[in-house]
Image (cartoon, rainbow, N blue to C red; front, side):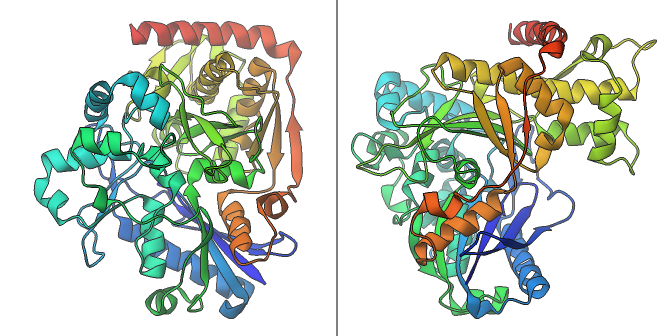
Length: 495
């Protein structure tokens, strides 16, 4: 018996087909091969067409079934990981009303801040663990204020993963984890957050009915079966935002465990059994995939927008078209720590939550035309992203999150030794590289819903550790010096 997992990112859709009994990955695919486009109708805005995500779900499913020759009847369940905090609006006929306002769109920051004040900061945090900030609730309020006709047509306000589940099952549903990431869940009342809906004047009936994050959420419809090649009746058995999903994929489901990723955005995610929140909202707290009314499992999330997107920008702008990320790693390794005085602030992808939703922009500091080359810029870019992680991790440590061991997948920027060793040395953490990704994790979790695994610990407990990156004391002094200059530059940029 087999399962399929999807990871619906803003850069690509990844999918994996897994043998449920062993956890063996038969195939992994991605579409498109290059990054998906984003539209930015105005500065600070970011939108994508939800239909494009579904087209790539169809394409990756076809590729998996063709490559493995597994009969679709043997695929018993599918799971969905998805980019968090986006907003998808559909009408009563389940047609998309407007492009999705995705995670890195900054238009609703002031809307969320106004609601935070109106609700009362202490009241909002104690009930929802977060400010509405720039999350899904604030984006929905922005549509209500600025596009009232679109809001009036809306039958269901959804997250990106809810939309994919809708296309697969024909049913509009959501989860507690999804409502939590949209700041639409009240942890004290264990229900949708009426205090947020009332303050924003939003209609509760636009929220979808709830299904469990791990469990039967619906089955693949005849229409979706024809489109994807899946068998009708295949269980849709798991759904979570990409960061809780990434953590679960790395077997981070118990209090005290920590995961990280450095894709388009960067995230550090630690699980606690307390309803913790940061009064400064530099990090955010959400319901984890195994949270329930009788078991608090809260994920504390640090997010950095300018991560892989900054690394990609440098590759596209200053490297030759043939330069790969592996080439960039070799280039960076040939430059001394600190890039001989060249430093990069990688915050050019919208407001940064860990900077309290400030938008400081990307900055290149200390450039010397007589000393610095392309190679220095490549190294400074990698170091700048790594220093951003360290800056945020030190905030998490202040809040009591342990960083002795950090689990990461064998993809994105953690494949860079320069990047990973910089973080390890400055934080003192051992970084474990696991042979998994979000699509694989979603597939394994979906197997629980079909009875192919007893529970999540069994489903994701077969992790293969490929390598461990440990602190390098001999480089600590040089890295601390470089980080200190970088942190001072950030402080100056923040005023």
